[in-house]
Amino acid sequence: MFSHKALATAALAGVLILPLAACGSPQEQAAEESAESASESSSSVFESVSSSASENVDFAGRATVAGVFEIESSKLAIERTKKADLKAFAQKMVTDHTKAATELKAAITAAGLTPPTEGLDSEHQAMLDDLKNASAEDFDGKYIDAQQKAHDKTIDLFEKEAKDGQAGPVKDFATKTLPALQMHKTEIQKLDDKY
Image (cartoon, rainbow, N blue to C red; front, side, top):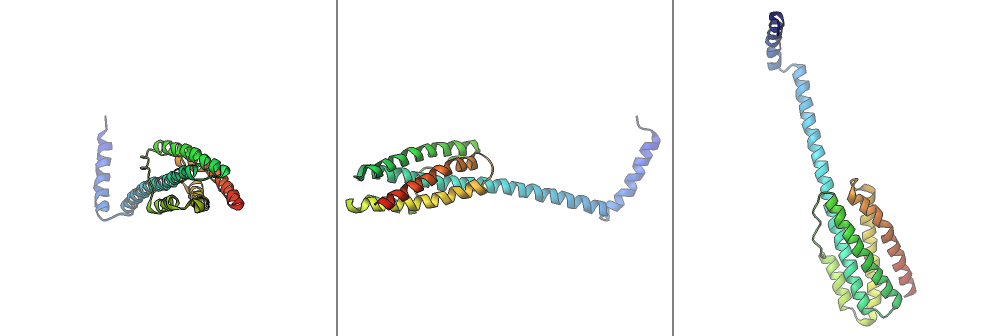
């Protein structure tokens, strides 16, 4: 057990420290500052995690919209174009972007997030409507232009995520998918040069 001398020393220390604490001693101020710093630090860590999750959700939403546009516009091209090489390119877009959509959903789920609802934003819907309403003579050129614009934006999106995204499955997906998107851009440029 404790000796009377140890208890007396502890009591005396308490009596001496208590008035100092009430006066805002340097030790107390340092302790308060440390607690505030820890609170701010944990708050900024939370904000960082929250911001990273938000950025993952934003990327996933934008990548999903881009993928849906690639698939839907390319299905339309398969139906409407008479050019075999353009039809083959469109089929490749449907295949590659369907696979990428499945992989994106898996990456989002692995990151602990809910995959976004598939659909088009107003910009992509307008582009798709323009293709649907294009005359037979104008369709191929409009499809090629739409593919070039869409791939430029999508590549920028994926490059940013691959470079600046939070380490994890979503960034890994972007890094893995980027070379295929760049190859698509090269292929569509060759078709544009040809037609």
